[in-house]
Image (cartoon, rainbow, N blue to C red; front, side, top):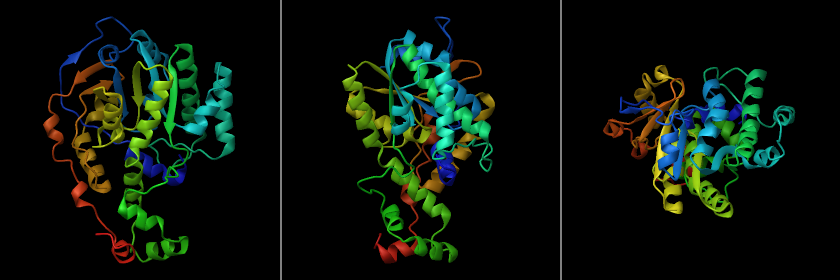
Length: 327
């Protein structure tokens, strides 16, 4: 993710406030409470509630997680990694290869990662942490005999052949100089542009689901775990829903948190993001997982999310109504 699009990634990896539920521990004494989800579901979606947080970056690239998946017969893990980096990462066979892979990413200066808790800092530590984690996920997948699938697009806008969001279509057709002029005149705000970009990305989740489905089929089928940003997991027509339809399986959607403190105030934050992007985030996940305790809980009050549908409040910049005739 380039720094230019860092704020967009933070918006996309939406955070989740959840009510208390029925906690159930590790009934096999295994490394993580996620074992129960992997054991009982052929499709598990682990929603990353905020991309780039160090504890979650480490968890998604941990031996603990991959050992749990392998123990419960998971055959495939779909990782939100640009496909071109995934192809490069398939050469990773040792810890030394992980570091070399990370250094290659950093030297290329094409990919830049941010810690969302420090969004304005471009830290070499953050670059190495995230790049190393991507390589380590591949190393662990190979070590545990799990097929890694790299499903993300190769650039922030995806290089889409079609455009679905009418506001994004309008803004994408503006020349650079027009952008500058309209921005200075406040005819199009950064918030409007960021929201349109993210809606356009979300609208192509079926393409990602199709890519994952094909990879699972080529790999002989079997249990699948997907690790996307949280919004992809809960949006109507999003990645989880598309995979359910394509694979004919019911997804277990899990919000992954670092600890209990991260959950405080998240309902308000989620409402803020739904309002900013003008999207529907009213679907609650079935479960929440807490990394600090290794426990999983069922969401007890999904109705609390019912008011988080802002899709009908979509704002259309006046210039789009004039130029593109957007209704």
